Length: 278
Image 1: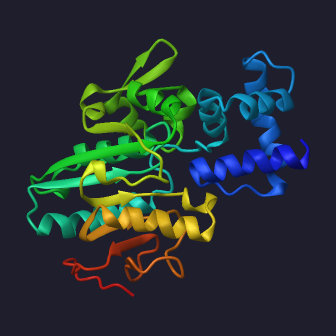
Image 2: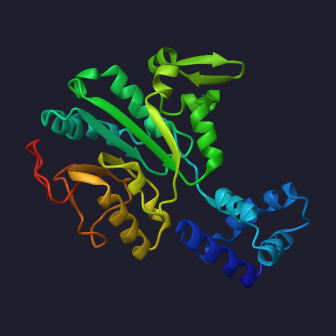
C-alpha cells in the first residue's frame, strides 16, 4: 500500500470513527482490506480505494470502517470491572433507592459484555435491591450488532471467560452453536451508535462501560468522547475503563475512585459507598 492510499484510509477512519492509525499498522490495513476488495469483485486494495474515491460510495465506506474496527471481546473480560460493579457501584446505587438503574455498554461488539452484566444481575438480584435495571448496548458496526442480537456463539466463544455453571444455566445448544436464553437477551437493548456522535438520544445513565476503546483514539478525541459520555451520566454515576485507559490529563469530568483501578465517578455527585475519590 502506497503512502497516498494509507493517508486516504487513515484520514477516513479518523473522521468517521475517531480511530488513530499509525504507519506501523499498514499491514493491518492490508490484511483487512484485501478480503473486502475480493468480496466486492475487485482485483486489489488500490481498485477498492479508487472506487471509494471516485464514487464516494457510502456503503463501501461503511464496510471499510467496519472491517477496521477491532471486535475483540469475551464473556466477563478481565473480571475486575464486574467485581467493581458488585463491590462498589451497585451497592452505592442501590443504597440511593433508585427505582431504576440504567447501564450503557459502549462499543459492545458482539455482545459478550452486556450479556455478562445481565447474567450477573440475574444470578445476584440482591445487588440491585429490587430496582429495575436497563442495559443499553451500542456499537458502530451493524454486522456485530446483528450477531449480538441473535445471542448465538460458537463453542470457543462461550468457553472464553464463561464459567461452565453459567453456560449450562443460561445457554442452550443450537446445532453447532450456543444461544443465550431469551430471558438474558430481553435484558439488553442493542442500538447502533458512533462514539463520534452525541449519545443524548439514549437518555441518562448511572453506569457506563466504555472499555478498551479509548486506546484507539488520539488525545483530543479521547477528551471529546469522555465529554460526550459525561453529558449522559447522572451526577455521581460510575464509568468503567479498560486496564490500560485513564482520564488523567484527558478529562476533568470524572474522578478516579480511590484504590479501585479502572473505576471513575462523574464529577458532581457524592459517593454514598464510603469510598472517596483520590
